[in-house]
Image (cartoon, rainbow, N blue to C red; front, side, top):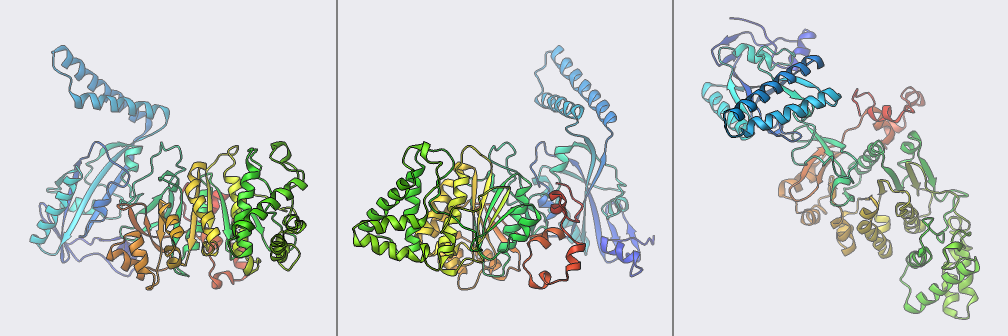
Length: 611
């Protein structure tokens, strides 16, 4: 029998364009179909496991041989579903009563089926789910009969290991083959009724290496799409807030796409109700913030000031003490060294004097008064009779009366607020980058630790090496990494200086306190240190050496790892790209593709998906 058939989606496209057709002929046998130079056989799934998890069909989708998996879904109208459930419950109840009347023991399978049917009936009645007729079929191919038999045995063994029962499509080989073609036609009609939740678990919406988040976790905010699994093309979904801690560390060489991935995650977390703060050294997040109605604070710009002596607004009685402790670390960064014990004593006295002169004491009622400035602290040091204090004041003079005073010589001009706040440090002098990063991080931490406004938050430190290169800055990041989970916050540390981070004890501690670890392309000089620190296999290390831009390895634990490629919609890409060629396109291009004011539409872009 010579019948022209199309064997793939590409052949369908080619046929439409007049570029090619399917095989010249097919030969039909009871269980085997000869399609050109190949033999094909179809298996029908007739039995399903009682309980499954998300992405449970992934072993079939990742089968190393040539295997077509076809899932046909046909919704059942609500009135028909209700009537069928009513009859099924009646049959099960009659069976239970007959067994009880005859004195037989209760059948566990019947009892479980009755409970499941009752629960499903209630969900359908409340509109929480629907019923679907689902057919699952497998078509495998081989070059000769012996190979086809071996492939069939391997696929059936794999299906049995998944608690799937399958039968060959005897005398229906042609119908089985056409059913597995991308035509949307089920000619076998061997379906089973599934509800919405069971049907959803059949789709490869999660990587098998990364278990789905527990929906009942009170700290979780929902899975976020990181990208496509490079091995299976399935979706890699991850909820950092459902892990042991909410921190992450992203390590990569320059140009690997680490900031691109960080911006993509931040944008998608905004739709989960997460408040995001970003320390942006290179002004890469401002277009994103402006597009979603966020706040951009440009440190170093004329008139923009941050007072390091500001007290927290959380109403705590010990905030003056906590501010004094922070100022010791901050002043050490400004001085470029750790003060000796005598200098620490002078600094501590000067800090308390400056606050006292501003009318602020340990009494919480005075904490709402305007805070003193860094110049007032330097004045308190000079007012003392100790020459060491005057030397400290002279060393602080560049930041109080000299060339670097612009950031500190007045009250704070802009405060944290909104769903996305970006601190741009591009205009900050290089000598002040570490101090500005630490001061910004402290302002964010005051908001995070405010127990009167509890919500999930993410703090992104891009180019974290600016802070980690200083001992006091590294200690501040370490304290945040250890304490952020208590306040429902996650710390995202992003750096390209992998070797420097892993070479210090504080850097290793920050990595150890990150339950989410993302590794992108690594330099050959640093890959050995990364492999030792993250216990990578030889294959994983080789993958990081040759990974393309945007390809990464997500490590969520020793046995939870997935290689993926970050993906973004067209509108997301325009908001987060830093490619000079794309940013240099004509204004008309961006006007015609202007990001919509609706953030939901901005996230979905032209993908046609739903949130």
